[in-house]
Image (cartoon, rainbow, N blue to C red; front, side):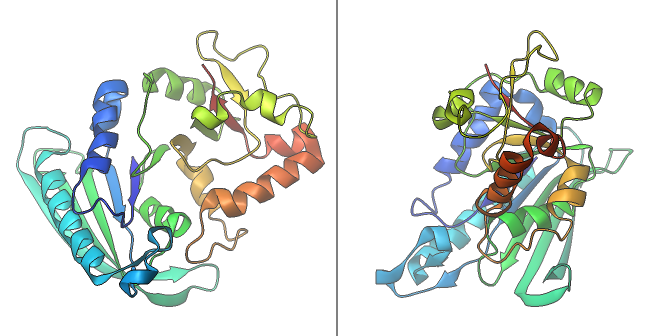
Length: 285
């Protein structure tokens, strides 16, 4: 489970992030058993009249509030995430951040704090908190850094302000993806994508509805775009395709705003055969 965070006006209050985590309790309890990798992105201090949260440009007051939020959230998660018995062992590292493929060092470092249970025979971590020092990386590079700490076959990616609003049977979805190796990405719809198959109809894309469905009780729709909002992806696809070096993500980029549009253009030009290379679907109840 990857959650990416950045400064927002409501900090130091954790209400936005807590709303997201509470939605896991309500709609996808299995997520609470996952290894959580949470990224606190960097920032740039600007005069108070020039703040822009989406760019990571904040005032000194907002910077201080963000630091309080990070400290309090890290302490809370360190003590509570996983809710399993056993002594919690913590380790910390610091490393430079580079941009592939030329591994050019940028003006950022990554502080990583990992928590594992002492009675966990596999020694798998239950929590990794990543704090970016220096200017904002942006969603794409933040996810890339988080993936370095992910060793599971699947990754659930979530932004700090995208809560769940309906029940998700994660076990059933992952079982389906285990059986259907052509599935690399499974997104969850929002209000704007509730009629996705109608939105793309007649715009040069193949039919979006999957017929017949792979599993009768799990409605699916093909996706011709990589939505950054809540989704499950094969970790190998993230590491070997999204972050292969083909897409030159820069500081501040979102995956959907860069690679997402390239994906959409490739599918519009190449049709269903081009889409098969992506294997992207939406859970479409």
